[in-house]
Image (cartoon, rainbow, N blue to C red):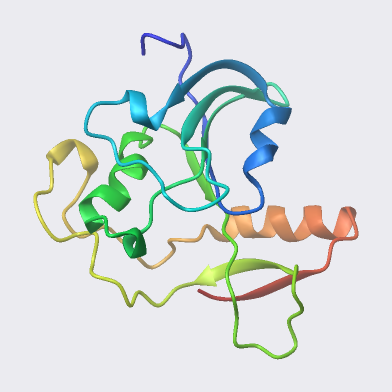
Length: 167
C-alpha cells in the first residue's frame, strides 16, 4: 500500500519460462520478496522473486515473478501465503511449466487447466482467518468456466494451439 495507489484487478503468478512477461507491463513499483519480513523467497532457477505492480492494457495488475514451491522445503502455509495476500484482486491467473502424461501433447504446448487433483497436503490445514473467506470454499468451479472460454476464444483468434487437461 505504501508503493502503489491502486488496487490490482488481476493477480498474475508467472511460472518458469514466463517471468519476463512482467517487463512488458507499465511498471509502477517493484517489491522484492527478500525485502518483506518473513516472506518466503524462491530458490527455483528463473524465478526473480518479486512483485511487480503496474498496468497491462490499462488494467491494474500485481504480477509475481516467480513463486515458492512445496518441493523447495516450504510449508504449505508459506506456499499459499502470496495467493492469500493477493485476495483483493478479482482474478487470479497462474502459469507454470509442467510435464505431462498425455502422449498427444508436445513440449511447449499450452494447456488450459480445467480441473485438478491435489496430491500435496491441503492448503486448508491450519488457522483460517475470517478475512480469507470460508474454512472450506466451494471447489465446484475453481477454474472459471467464463474465463476458460475467454482463453479458448483468444487462443483461436491468435491461432495458438491450446490443449486442455487436469493438473
